[in-house]
Structures are given as structure tokens and as C-alpha cells.
Length: 441
Ligand SMILES: Cc1ncc(COP(=O)(O)O)c(C=O)c1O
Image (cartoon, rainbow, N blue to C red; front, side):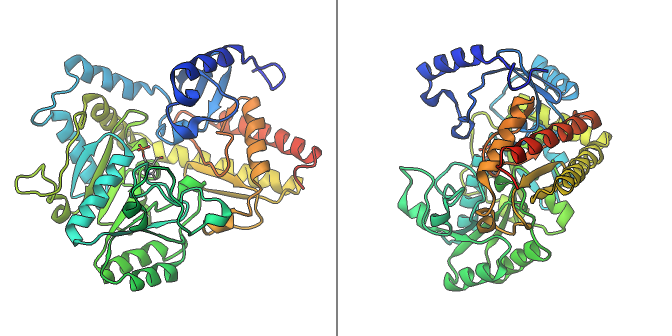
């Protein structure tokens, strides 16, 4: 494998320049714009390949979808079969849509009925609009650091700078003031803060949206009773509880994290691991609410999308869930996740490095912190320079974790014990280097 000193990047550099001629910044999602600017040209199983032929063990997993690994044959074969038959009808109901809807309702506790769309952002948008229609209220609670997509209702207080935590921090120019100001920001794992926010906005809050594990800031675990506390507060105040399971759904359990934690939300949004990399997302929930969508005659909440229920996404999702039903997907990824976390903790202890290895199931990250973080503010003590340098050095050694602060890593069904052992070996080398360079003590 090429190492830092031998890795070729000429082709990537050349193509990146060309990409910039035709696309602002050369990337099609802002968060993909990181150094080095690699151009990718292939993927298989646990690996991705750049234009210069360098191979990387992929833990970025495109921010989460690849729960089975790239180009998993069970999924791609089902997609090919579906495409031999059709692409999109765009009228009536496709047989694949019924099959997938039944599977989701069987597995996801909150899912009495489900609707398909194409991205997590669409799903959270629909969930929020539905909550407003159901309650006749306007305000929304979200948590500092959580991400629920790019639209105006939720694109605030994401990765805020320390001085903007909890303050008015819109994520984009051009957002509607009313949308920004009707989204209230609370502190994760702080029930008192949520209770006070409900009290001071009595009768005005339509919904509370939460990543049950905020993976958009790595892996901050909900403390005992927190998610149940949110359920109770929403019930007490007549607001809908939305679990945004776009990352946790299907990755942590075929029934979502709600099947693990035992708290059932009113509405659930899902995407990413749902179809192992193919584009499809869903909103699911109690029929009494879902029946308000105007897909049902008499419904008064608009729901539409030309590509909703496309054969590619539905077939890929059916295949992904089928494989989870038939094979020990979660046993495998959870075991490897534990092996990674244990291995890293052992290395840190041996080298005397102060770090907190966080994670759940197949997801992990190393925070350079001296304690478990409970919310976004705690993460401001993370040594971001070391975090980024560590990931950058691993990338030079063929391990792909996005070199950005507070990013999680994902293990897939295609990763092997050897992949974890290789990653641990390389991590130890890199951590020793960082120590020698005086960046870590
Ligand atoms: C928890 C969560 N919700 C919603 C979204 C938005 O999903 P999409 O990028 O598919 O629009 C994301 C994307 O990363 C996410 O992590």
C-alpha cells in the first residue's frame, strides 16, 4: 500500500482543477470540500479507490449509508433485477413500494404507516410540516449540534463556533427569519433545559426533533432516561416527538435506535443505511398523523415527489433489509465496533494518551478529551487540531476517515477482523508520531 511519502495525487489534482471549472468548489455537497482534494473513481466492499489508483479502507462510508459495504452483490443484484423490469412508473403504486413499506412497518416500532421520498432532508421537512398541521402550532425544538438536513426549518445551530452555541446561529445566508426564529435550541442530555423551553413557549411547540444519538457531532450518547424524558415532555405539552433516525435507523438495529432504547416517537425519519447507498428516504409514524398526508383522499398535508418510490431505491432497500433479516449483519458490525473501541482504548492507555473513545454499535470516534461528552458544549474541549491531524495522517496510510473535526466513523458488513487490526496498528503508529511531534501529551 502506498504511504504518505509515496502516494500519488497527480490525477486527483488535475481532475480537481477541472471539477472547479464547472462546479463551484468542485464538490456537490459543501461538507465534502476537504483537503486533500481527492477524486474518486471506484469502490468495492470496504474499500474506495481514487483516480491515482490509491486504495483506502473506507470508514467514512459516504457519511453513513454503507452498512453492508460498497457494491454489495445482494443489493446490486436486486437493483439490476428491478431495473430489468422497470425504472419508474410515477403513477399508481409500484409492487416494490408495497413490499418495502410492509417490511418497515414490521420492524420499526413507531411505523404504523410509511411514505417514501428521496433524501433525509425531505423526510425531516415533511415531518415538521405534518407536526405543524396536526398541532396548529408553529415552533420547533432542536438540539445544538444536531443536523437534520439543509432546509430553513432546521439549518441552524449545527457545528456552531463556541461563541454562537445556543444563540441565533443560522447555517446559511438566505434563510427566512420566521423559520430561523421558530426553531428553538436546547442542550442535549439536559431535560431541565427542554422542560423550561416548553414552559416558556406554552402551547406553541409543534414538535421536538432529535437525533436519538447525535452522530453529526461524532457519538454523544443519550444518558439514562433522557429520551424517555423527551417522550414524557412532548406528551405533557401536546407536541409531537420526531426521532430523526437518518443515521441510526437500520444501522443500529433493523428497527432503528428506538427498538434499542425502547422509546417510541410519534414520527420517524429514515434514510442512509436504509438502502446501503442508494437514494431513498422515508417518513413513518402513527397512522392518526400519517393519514393527514394528502396521499390519502381527504388528507390536507401535501406530499409529493416525482422520484418517490423509484425502483432503484426501493429494490436496494428491500435487499438491504432482507439481508439484515437473513444474516448476522448487526452481530458482525457490532462485534467489530467493540473490537475497534477496545483496541483503541488499550493503545491510549499503553501510550498514556488522554482521549475518550466514543461509539455505539458500528460507529466510533476518538475525542481528544478527558471525559465523556454529554452535549455540544463539552465538545469544545476536544483538541480539534489533533483530531484533524490524526485523521489526515491515517488517510496518508490508506485509512479513509474524513479529516474534519467531530466526525464519526462507520464499520460495514464488508469490513473484516483484519481490517480492524490493520486500522489499530496504523492508529498506534500515527498516535506515536503525534506524540513525537509534541502535538499530543
Ligand atoms: C440525522 C440526519 N438527518 C437528516 C439528514 C439529511 O439527509 P440528506 O443528506 O439525505 O438530505 C442527515 C444527513 O447527514 C442526517 O445526518
